[in-house]
Image (cartoon, rainbow, N blue to C red; front, side, top):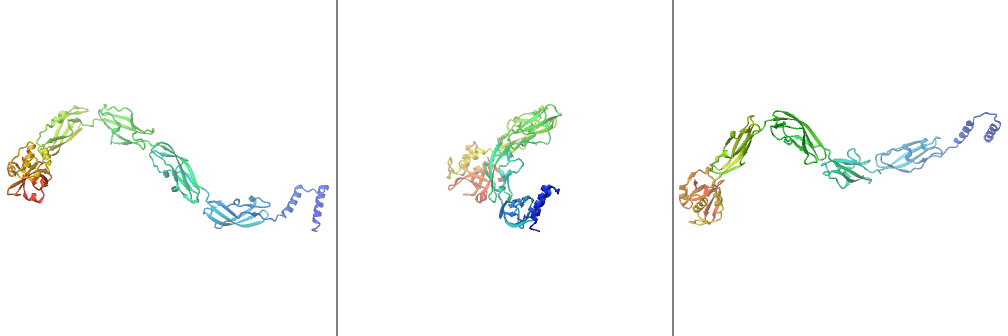
Length: 479
């Protein structure tokens, strides 16, 4: 029966074709032939890949492997990938089992080595949206990493490893280019030319200086009296006023817009209401802003006053009051006060410092100029002295009468308590080289005095607090 089967098949076909006695559709003949071909496909698919290399992050699919079949295409075959320990986001080498089954159920299994590698360079980009043109505010940071970042698919943020060719200067407006380089741990390198647009887009700042916008009647209106201005880039932004302020309209409210503009055209505006009032006292003018006199000198304080003029009341010079604590008979620093008040009640006070100098200031300078001169008993100067001739010579050089020995000078001067001593007063000592008043010097202030001490020391300065002089101190004298 098996041997005769081909003969019978050919006979049937021939009969159909020639005699057409059996009406079979053409597709039935073709299907018959296909069944015969299918019975002959026993060849399994072939997995050609022994090892594949995939980029980091690859999730394996059949197309990653080279697979062929004598009949079927890859997209109609059943492919199973047993990944095992495979990690798409972990660099390394893995082994996976690939199973392929064609449409005729022929199956092939194969273990394939899979190597996950990093072949992607980092991406250099702006930290803000804007592509490779990066806007930077004038006078901002010059640190490029404040504006640029680098991200790697494996290593993550690698910004700290960026190197730059050149830098930026945010004090210069305009475009500036910098080349950035970065390399990841796998050695993939990226290079990017970045354009930095240095610009001034920040408006100046208006800072109010006063709690209110009161304008003194009759003054020239100046917005700078009420606002401070500053800018991030322009050192001298311009302050202007839109609207007229008439300071001659007493007790009126007037509106104006204060505008500050920098040299890039950025501006800030503030609407303000200004109140015109009489808020300032009379203007007092004096001949001097400081008085220096010698003690004992009288002063005509009215003669120092030039004028006092009020913006509404006019000349009020005759109403100026003069006060102070000046003691012209005692050296020291004092204050003289001039006061004027207008009809509105605005008061102006002007204080001037008054220095009352010692009448012995020149005398002291003369005495100090002789420090270092020699001492000799009975000498009378001008370069060799004893103690009393030194005081006599100094006083006479300054037009002051003084004569005799230390004892004579003691008896001819007015007694002064130690705590009331002034510059140029005489200080006396007793029982030094003989009984009674035996030594004299000139007081300098601060507990010190200048004197012709002895043959060993000559003219020197000493302290009343030194034990020797404290023990022998007899008192002070004023000529």
